[in-house]
Image (cartoon, rainbow, N blue to C red; front, side, top):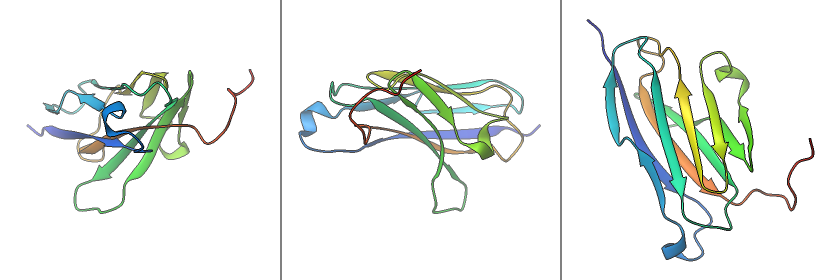
Length: 126
């Protein structure tokens, strides 16, 4: 039986006041069988932040790929991940990464969430 190992870590961006930049990700790590659903939660405590991003770092790779993000309440999944990943939540406090049916090896990775201020001034229009 092959197992999928997923590690997590949280990143902080826009470090102006460290006490206001707490980013937490849960669970800290998990092992799943291929096809078993994965959900990773991320939250932050900085009221100035309105963007939560999700990154993936595959085993043996130094690059982190942007999987997707939630800006305000608008989720975006990058094109290479659209068929396998979902993101949702609100950039102002909490979001999650969902992998409904992870594959055998391609989804086994370290996943990072990061929180920051969006590089714009207003919420996107509908």
